[in-house]
Image (cartoon, rainbow, N blue to C red):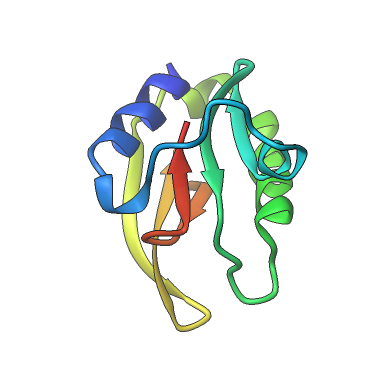
Length: 108
């Protein structure tokens, strides 16, 4: 269910993503958020001093911490400004899931 929400929202945000290459490099894999072993988005942008790889680790941690009640709630996307940069914050049950910067990610 979570993956469907994320994929649907990413599909509706074409300015936030671009097509990846067929065979990702090790670096690209480290920058890719996976849900249920499926690649969802490859992060490219650094927010503040947080690298794409660190952002992937934070996203994984957030996804693992969600309760059954959390995942029953609709996923929300809100525009935000972080470190002086515009972005989109994905929230589930009011808890942050993922922060994307326009042009700073690639759909998988």
